[in-house]
Image: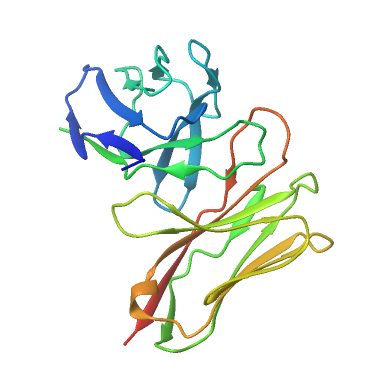
Length: 114
Length: 112
């Protein structure tokens, strides 16, 4: 099946620890995005990537890092510098990045602090 | 002030009712408008995608865009308990490399 796979579904982070969230897609889409969702705040853009080896900061990039070594994969690392990491993290893709393509989402990773 | 405003609800309606969900926005550059449905602990699912002003219908769902008023709506006819979810509006300017701008979502409950 074509789709976007996020793993793990639930993740727990200890103080001072970096954790990495996985996002894999087999839709052959060029652009990939990471959003953070908090209650009552909608989705906020963390990072996005239009092509391999290129990515741009979104609105709330501080404390996060990404890589795009393969078209299919766009992992997100939540570093210890992110002081409030508890949230629902969503990965999305689009066929192009002209701003006129709808985005398709994975089923998210819920990150909590231990 | 947020670029996109959406009433958080919850909106509670009886089964079979017509539901109206709305968003207002402030940036006249937005040209593409989307509605997503999100069930609890799941990712958003695209319901409707429209360009510029006008109406678009798909089964029980109708999306309406009024660019002159900066107002978009989603109507759900013959609502079902399975429609209970959070509905997110989203929009984009159609150019550039940026992602979508989302409303905060409206939680809908359809009572059987």
